[in-house]
Amino acid sequence: MPTIPLSTVGLEYGYLPQQGLFPPLDLRCRAGEVTAILGTNGRGKTTLLHTLIGHLPPIAGTLHCTDPVGFVPQIFTPPFAYSVLDMVLMGRAARIRLFALPSAHDVAVARDALAQLGITDLADRDFNALSGGQRQLVLIARALASECRMLILDEPTAALDWQNQAHVLRLLQRLARTTDLSILLTTHDPAHALAIADRALLLMADRQFLYGSCDETITEENLSRLYGLPVREVSVEGYRTLVPLLNKEEAL
Image (cartoon, rainbow, N blue to C red; front, side, top):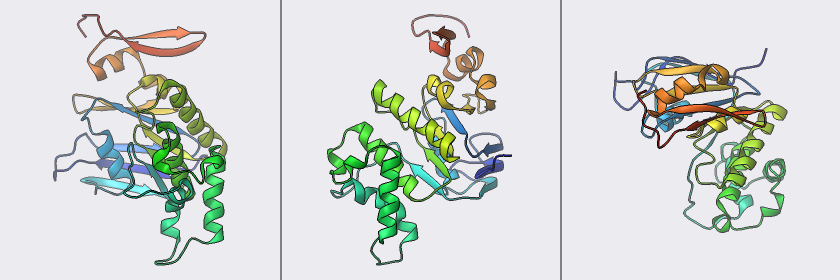
């Protein structure tokens, strides 16, 4: 049986006491699996992530983490100019004593994280001078350098072109499969969930949620309800995906 680095029982989350955004949530993030969270803007996806990583206290229920959690924000702009290696070393902060310098081991772990993502050649580059796709890979490397077993990402492909989206998604899927990492990410694209996720959590407009395997949750009916417009399933060269009918007027 796969381990479960992160789980919740009856979790209610939000900003106001006794006013959870959704009914109690039982979530199981298993090692080696990818979970995708989908929902419209303002539906509470980022609020849920901030609760899961401990930045916000739960309103009710319990949150259980058996392993360190790494977090990759959607946007990160450092206040100073840092090299890529220095950025990744920041992921070691919790393991470095106060006022101590990174050890040779810390540097080795950071360089190994860069190697896992195939970006060792960026180590001495200025982080702020990188492309959006390169920055995203560096932030993932920073999280991996913390030696986390649970990786949480807030819309990791939001600002990327199709080529970089595909690269990041393939990378996340490979990390889950080859390193037994548990990955939880938010996305606005159901195709991304179908491409790499094992499970999906849909945060619906009526303050309800659907949670289960992608085959059960990522359907025409559920996505039409989620986004408030017709969605149809198509198959392209044997790959299943779903597309919105943006110009079609149709009662849902």
